[in-house]
Image (tube, one colour):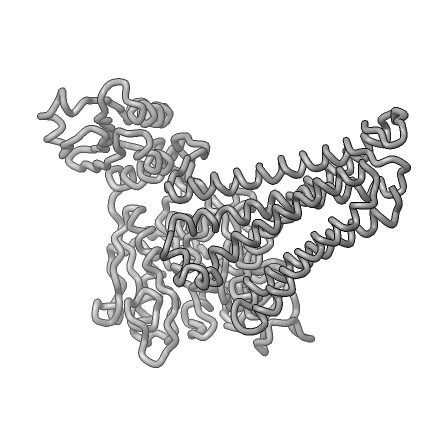
Length: 623
């Protein structure tokens, strides 16, 4: 076989491929107009011409070469047949049937629409492999038709696999059939739930209403057996069958099996899990959260937390006229209610100008944009002087609250913080540098869960302002910077989100826990001051780190830091990608991964072929 003959064959194949590409451009990219007809017509002409060229060129070749060219011409014909089927089911077929084929014969149109890409795959993949194999033998004295045949069969096999995979995916999609292959297990008692049970001072009964030999009942029973060891004398677990003991079930408010009841005295908290494992899977994965919520309701007295109102706080249900709406804190309130907290508003109309109610377990100032009245400031200071608990989340555009912060040894500059190295990307704009992320926590009880996770759950601050300490601190006041910003964070005075001369980088305080020792006969004053109100807003509270920060803050302020800790969950965490990441993953899985597999296979077979001993063949013979 001469190199010239081999080169003309490769040129014909390249021309054939260019012709198919031109048809694709005309039909799929241009779609309408004269450009479509020009590209499509040129593509068909090139494909047909390349086929004729290959046929004519093979007539004077050797017998082995003619055999290989016959296989290639068969693949060309397969490609031309695919083109014919495509044009038959396209709008060009209207000239033959006086109407679109999809109207005349819809089933035939669907068959042709699925058949022509399958034929193209069976043409192009083997064609590429055969040409690679023949080019490797361009200077060989004898054409090894066995190698070319192997390449042909390999290409056809790969094409069949691709067609089968796409056909299977289409059928499964149309049938809307899914299989859940995720790993599943029931949540185990978490540290926080164990601490709640460990701190029981009165007996608490748990009744499990499940029939015998029920899978869900066995999983729930195992959970409570693990939990009961924390307080064997006070936590009792009993399994019942509602069908066998309907009177007792009715007394507890249970009408069906699959229900769990936690009871202490007259207080009862039932919740339904279900009986079928597939339907109860979600409840079992969140079982620890649900149990802890009911435990706090029946085992702990209900506390009252007041949210100040009337100063543009996040707690207000309506945006203040003339001001940009801020993310709400509705999810924060729901989170507090799940901790057995009664959330109430407190403004001038509710008596904030006179005093903070005596039943207040904590007072929350959530992102106020206007300063308090002098009477309100006086009421808050008096509340703190008698051992009150204050939770302040500040706004860069809001007041500095010097009258409240200075006695605690703090000052709020309000200058927005930014970081050009570590931040959360949300809009792909430079302003994203104001979305701070940090995993730098102290060992203070107000961040018990976060510090225990060793930085696995970072906290997001979307627009924090500069918060700093006064030096020296007022007498008796103790600080703990429980959450610090990343070391590359700077106070962005000019708002350009870039570090400028004079804008020093430092680990700015983001959350400060303040405590003042108790005077004789009084409770110690506690306060948590946050440099950002968005940190507990609905935008970021679904983030685990932000949620734990909110819960641990509440527990430390109300004196229940002993039960702080992580809640166990077996729920799958969704993987979220940006649009650019989705595009990258699409091209990597669809094109890059198959290309790597083919490349590895090609290199492996080439090396194997070089190591194998070559048998002598007679001129014109076949291996």
